[in-house]
Image (cartoon, rainbow, N blue to C red; front, side, top):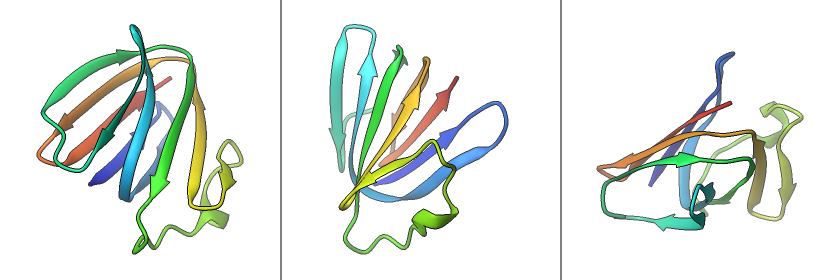
Length: 94
């Protein structure tokens, strides 16, 4: 699946991924490939991104807000909105 994270300042992340876990208002939830369409508000927390094995993300080019542990990236947000449709997830983050 494809993920974009957009902040008011810039697009901070865009790449193919295997999974993403987000802090929803009702609790944390994860989305995998071919997830049903969804729109959800997000609360303060951390977005956890599992990079695809074939991903070409150059982590040195990411902002210093990203933390990496192996093939996982972590990005803190203060809130936002998530839309998942046609195997593409877009997070509009604060």
